[in-house]
Image (cartoon, rainbow, N blue to C red; front, side, top):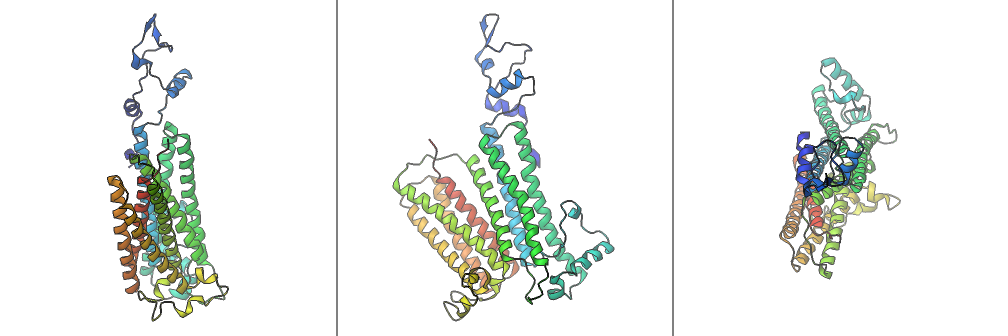
Length: 411
């Protein structure tokens, strides 16, 4: 798989136009016995000269070819993050996230293989609140299903880490990273490691005993939102960088209307991100099961139990009714903003790809609204809810694509 990312050094040097002298002891000043050398033999890169003078093995330098390779690499990485987010959503929908009560980076990579090992794993699960309160009649076969769901999510997280860290180390060693890219790659790899720790921190909140609570054991919605939010940041940063490296830039005339459209696109992308993040609170509190009607919530536009918690701010994050209400408002606001963005873009001459991005954004937005309403009315079936969660990633991706198409070209 890694061969898709890596290009032999010889091919990179050839594509960049760099030629190294093969003659041992050849002069460095561009002449030989009083005669000038051919032009191609005098075209040294600074990095190559330093490597030859120091007697060390020469390394490549960033070129258009290496930028395309790194762009494809980050595109694959963003795809693995999207897979982790989708798989994590399904794990939450199937209530499988608390089935693995330990966290070991290497030890847990091997699943139980014998009946004795499975029974030992099941006994560990039986010591925690989810089994005692919710799943006290669960069979071993049912436990295996939720265990494998969580196991798949954790193993996929390790694949994400390898997809970032191993190629990054290779590119760094080859000298393909500019100083700016080095900082960005370090930040991305650090965020991947932070994600793993944050995931376990989130799971721990669902394993804690709460004597004063008779509610269904679940992870903290705050930690769930933090876990999802950091994953979305990682996804956005990776996808943005990949698109910036892969897509040729269109030089757009800097008009007042274009500046307005660019700001509108940025604000719309922020709304999409915020709406997706609010979905973590909906999932964490099972708020999608509270009012399964649309457009009204029950028989009212504004339900009576919207402000039952004290202080008032607590309702925004802990009252399932308010959490669902907020998610509805954010979704409606987002699709309205995208509609306005579409009509504004039609008044401005844009390149073909930018027009495609705006039209795709509008289409995905209304599809996502339809999925959300259907999920609500059908009482949150797992397959449909998973598609709705995936739709939020698709919408965020298209919003980033549009922003990238409209980005300012530095002079």
